[in-house]
Image (cartoon, rainbow, N blue to C red):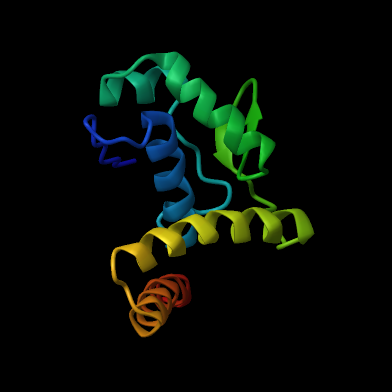
Length: 130
């Protein structure tokens, strides 16, 4: 699994790793049932503390992205079938409110926002259908 971390970023390392794993699933680069590296292996591969990777895996487990087995390790949830419930929609709305507020303050127009959303969303639809 190839991860690209920005050590100087304001985004914490654990969040960067989590985001890239979820993006990898959405793009079809990580498949349901596929094994992820062990906590220690991934930490060693990218040169970070294993507690950071453990935090990522535990969060992904809580959110049903992965399952953790004592023997087979961490795997992408083979029964991955997440739904957008009301709690998720509220969380998404809250996140988008901040992003759009900043975009507005930086001069991004509604049309530019629509174009960005459409382009990004379509990239996931195209990747999965390949």
